[in-house]
Image (cartoon, rainbow over all chains, first blue to last red; front, side, top):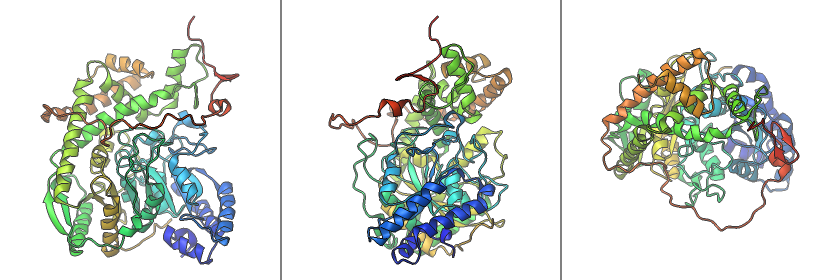
Length: 485
Length: 95
């Protein structure tokens, strides 16, 4: 095994035992980036020099016996998460030259744990998309088939892990933007409970739904990353002061005696038959581990997508009002008065999908339509959350497919926004209800495309989520393959 | 039609965006499709249901009112497209 192919926990051991050095690990990852990056386009910015410097400091730390949990581990961060002194673009022209004067809390925490920053990953512009095709910096490709999309919006964070261009990464998930690309790229991706991980320094898309989470090569790594990034942050008023357990404690507990719910609304027409069969098989594995699988109902599932596409654009239209060409970012040069400058700056700075959602949100919040759209959607959102609250009275975890289809072709859905939105049909509900979810690889299609299974648990039960995901992963019998690049 | 071309132009102004004629037509038709899809929300009886605007059940998040260091002027202005001394510079606002 090459060093860049290893997991966080494998590298931790090797580094501590002196079997390798952080400098060697970083060189291995940089070599891999140089080898495959022109195929995957995972990154907007690669931080070769600073990562090399950080590696030297990490090796010094290890020599002195002061290694921290992620000392010497190269991680990548989605380009929507602020990094002090390092360009943070959100995949948009309007922020193409924005250099944050501060670190996001998650970046501070990763730094505090010793991690090395290897780069900023590509994404759909402002995280609005399911395919990483809307970035101003170009399309990211799925390492399993370069003709196909990697999912999105955190596509670059998923491909960087899948193609071994980093050891682990962070993404953000507003409607599935971590779990869906994780499924389509054959890696593990988790969206924590709303409030579990600080959003301070995460550029806002839809503030009541956004949550940061990890992409990793296995579930154990996910627990290690969660140990680092989870927790209360006084700078973020929606972060919650619930104690953070050691998530790795949950990994070996098994799920004997658990009740696991299978929601009938998630196994409907339109699912790819290979996806359905792989997920049904995953359910059988879970049952084989001593869990009782029961049929449950989440009756308002069919309304999740409509609710999401009112709520998320409404919040986005308000959040993105700050891009006005005054304080930072792109400004159109030709305007002679202020209103003209605003309009030209925003029209030239934003791409089509972002404009579409700003328009949708502005319309939904505008005078005369607020009750019909935003208020109505928020009421239905209440019912969706109530469905989950009821379901978790009867079961410990819920199992569903992560995405209705495997990775689709580049360009296939770009002209049909509604068709694109349907990619997130199984992941959106967790954001609306605020519950945590994880996608774990559960097989491959005949053409060799990865398939993911999604587990969901109740609020702040990431421990149990990792417990069931790890138990499944260990017994799934899914062959560990690497994309052939 | 859920939304007309004129409404799209009005909403664009509210959002401080401008479109060409063909863009306006494309947006009108796409927004129509999306808004028609959203009609399905009207099938749900929401009488007496409180709107949920946040997934966390937080009330006010209070903290001590302590003065902490804030961004210095220079850093705050470092990304400005145009500046003069310690100010952001913009095109003329009034005639």
